Length: 316
Image (cartoon, rainbow, N blue to C red):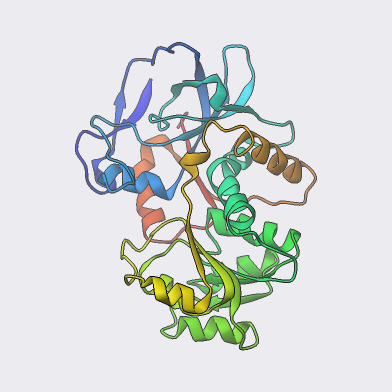
């Protein structure tokens, strides 16, 4: 089978297209013939060994695929490693049947990005009707879904993105206001978009100054949920007294802690699938690259050129 493998850590160029043996399922596992592969920002950290836990070489990146089981069931599946391949193995508990009416690419939008948006808004963000939610990286995979869910749940949404076209996309998805993420006075611009008021909930995955500016504009009892650091720049160290003085909460979220928990993954994704079928949630597919062009896909993602979900076609 064809797969993308790395034998040394580094940037996208370390990924190589290789021929490997078809993996053998272990106890409780099934072999999946892959029809579509999801790319996530975390995959770019895998290749660098800068992820939240150490990676081991040789490594096939990727954690999510859509494919068919030996019984012919189309499933969305989480894999521990090895997603960038034409065939993968995974435990039966990590597979979710895909509803008719949901395409492979739409299904991939829901596993990492959709469930992350759901949890950072509801499970950790505790969003309430009438609150103001700031969505950073609003044109990305998580952002495009978070805008729609936040509006569905009665919030006002301020979308933050780096280009006019990305901000236009956010507006088309229902954002009430948009802000240019490249502005030096980003915090002031977000408050201005909220009528000069502080905000209730911020979804933050950029890091660095974006995190710092965001924390400054939280209202009392406001929540900032951090779920990434795309800039690869750490925020300023936080003094606990500053949180106490502002009655602010910072929460970290890592989707891996939901894996294998039916109520946190399967049940959530099934609800997201239903919203797609009903036409209430519109997944944004940014681009599909051939498996052989995984390097180009990673370069595009890291350069912040992309919108929505990026996928790989294992047949090309």
